Length: 484
Image: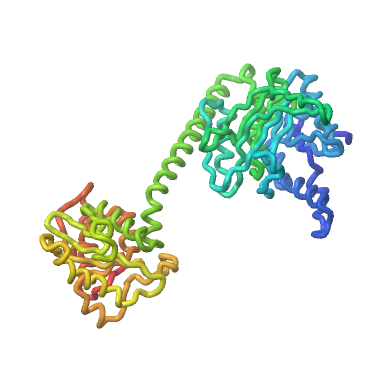
């Protein structure tokens, strides 16, 4: 082992079972797979700001007996078995638990390696029976915090829950160790030791981030998925994990993150407790606000996607949502009368009954779209003789392959054509802007072609009504949709 300074320097030593990334050159593309793997494994730790977080890495070939924690230690000789053994012996000699951080799976390998097992990854323990098996989840898996976590585990869970949506997860479970003493003899099964405590779980309640501890408490393993931000993990190790599980490790190196409440002044204690309470409130508030944002997005996305990019039923359904929010009673005529027999929607508000035709086009809207609504207006009396319509509107999602900001603000531009229109032609972009601003008065005026007294929710402001009136005047002058 290479010699290493043991004097306190404020940095907690952390064993990482790879060679120093600074000394591992990038191999030639034609190099052997072993060299490629060696470089890729070391490169994962190349950008960690160790001293910034209060840590000092101990790579392969360095003394690990004084390390406070080990990251992905190895059982294999020449891969870190000796360093792992010295790390465990050092922790045992000090009467401290060995804190171990390991990753489950390989983000770059999405295929099963064993056709006889539904698991594709595993984590093996040192000196204990059993293992943790992992099954890679499908892309887009949803995860959440497990209940009743302590502060350190909750902090880790929140940090890892914020990984990119494309980062993979593995569902974990404890597995027994099976040994075959002879080809013809019976297999010997050793049940797994210890307890696997979930920190983050998938939609089925299976852990995807977990803490494992054996019954004797000599080791504490945190199992996290591959493809993590190691800066945030190392920060968590120093600021949360070590103060919780191995506080003496920070005191030995005189780390600024060492907290010894027995040696604090009252002012220090008051400030520290206040800061810890603030951090807890921040974590809780952030999680609550993130959940609120996600719920709001899930509610808004079908309408936004339908109005701006949809066609067919998706588009008509989104238009119906907006009209209902504006106070209209909306009937899906395709479902009520049969597809293609009439317009898409019938919107009613007090004494007004409006026939709504909804169309989409990936390019400029052809003028013949208007004929669809005109034909439906002519045939309506035969379909519903006792329910005359008082107004109508054509709503078009035009140029929907373009970004919404790049689309023309009017559906039609030819003056002679728009001057001849007898009903408003609206863009779904307009409808979206009014829906997003909850300007229901603008929606009613646009569809009815005039102001209306019915006001769902809070009444619109005078400016909103005036703005909507200007839009109405433009439609009757030009027959086209104007920008909101």
